[in-house]
Image (cartoon, rainbow, N blue to C red; front, top):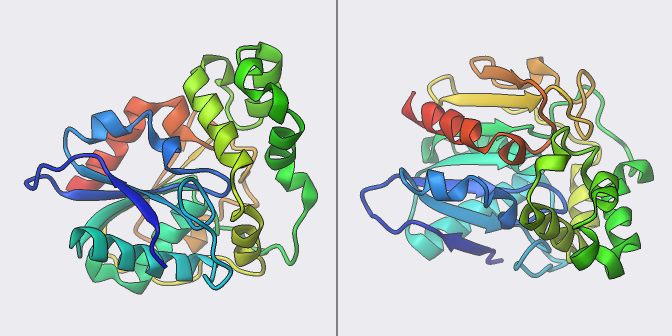
Length: 264
């Protein structure tokens, strides 16, 4: 299955960097950091199946390992790129970890931005309270375009995602809500994570940075930030006053961390 991807920088002298979004999100989640990253990388963003511009196909396996292989195949077939740096947020971070474990010779560096999969006890079934953002977006669908100018609606939609929700731009909020409202792959991708966690080995020769915000309510410490499951040689960072989408809260810092990881 071919995924919808976007190449931002075409300078062939720049190394490729693949960005992978999280559950219920889309490539647009990385807009705050793409312009700066494009000064050093050929940035390739991916829409996972049933997210963003990518259609959902029931035949597509939606577990993180299968999605990682679909991304490998798509990036090589569309751009002829065999090796690249990778950064992923949430589910995208777990997928990036699977890519590094499955085909480490093709990954030049890995930055896990609040990656999923680092929990000691995998969830056996969906817990609907964890789908709060999904249902909030649908509840306020008629009000989204205009309502996101309101602090009340922003607080309802984003206070649990970011401690800096007041500072998020209208564009960031609107595109996040739009992605969630147009996401037939949401529950299939969620089901693909059930009963699983990241347990594979990533070679020590591959540079890895794992980071979490200190107020991540989506994947909170300690139950979803088990360091023993991450590659043992990872640089592990905790960002103060930061939520589940650090590229929104501290875009300049995320660009710096991804760049430094790629240089190690």
